[in-house]
Length: 431
Ligand SMILES: [Zn+2]
Image 1: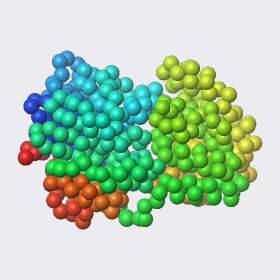
Image 2 (image 1 turned 135 degrees about the vertical axis):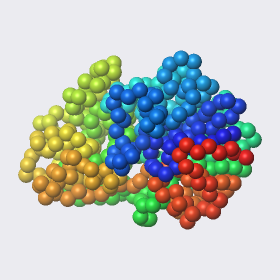
Image 3 (image 1 turned 120 degrees about the vertical axis):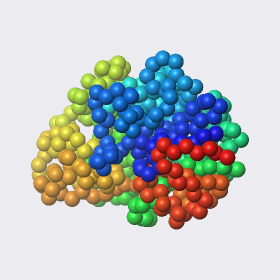
Image 4 (image 1 turned 90 degrees about the vertical axis):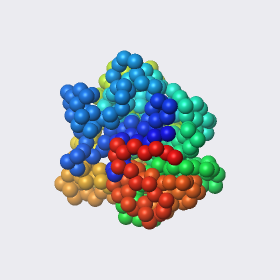
């Protein structure tokens, strides 16, 4: 079995790993970079051909996996829906099967209707967690993990007499932390290689905040204040949506979401009965024309019809706002809301994403500065701390640990000793 990490050995984003056995190419994730060569946010150059992307080092040079025609023998295992793991699937030959969980497919569908409107794959194969499947010459077992993307998995891959564990992205502080604890207690044995994410290794070690703690903090905030509270969170961070909903329920507030978020919840409904839905009590929906238009274009009129009674008008929101928690994002809709809400009430603003994104904020940060409002923080990361990574490495006890999904692979030296450092594009025979 030959292993090549095409991208991700020295960065967070663009995750793309290839295993080759008996002429079969198994890709683990096929992500778009987050950071470009200039150190700025990565932007996919427009109007270039696949050949140009390959020669520019943007797409990995893997024979016959792109475009149409007869593809090479290949398959993709997708750990979760975040763009840094899935963003380049659009270039893949549509005949190549892409294996993913139900929740991952649901989120990719949402991204095909709402911007970036990434075309949906045609050859999706849904995997069940813990259930071993055969993919070409490999045997693959998806392991459910706790991450900020719902239904994210790690993979155990067996082939050529070797066992490899690919962590994908994981943490141990979310609403699914029990799956991390169970993995520590009952790890798959005899792991030869572990490809391990290390996002947090070079970030300041903070006491990990549990999602449950955020709920307690938010309940207190909602009970103690009589202003509208804004929570800036990703609509795809399902744990955070649950936190927002439960906090509203416990404090008697109304949770305001937009159509995009309502649609994500609808699509993920089969995952859990405790996932809040737009037609539940305590939830109202703020319509934005753009969102409604995308749903109509995506033939989702039935969904719009089903939830229309939950729509909240701007006039109603004006009156109710001191008793709401408004889930929003750093975009023009926030500015629209601020324009219409009563000027005598100062809102409380909570940033519920990675702090790095706040530094690039185009709307809320300038707004808060202009009106002298403070932006408070209410967040826990989607990634494991170094102590949590160390525990997992010890539990799996692999022959070799291969660092990935980190800007500082050398930081692994503090938590593991049997390290195998790879460079992007370097191939190794797994003996
Ligand atoms: Zn990632």
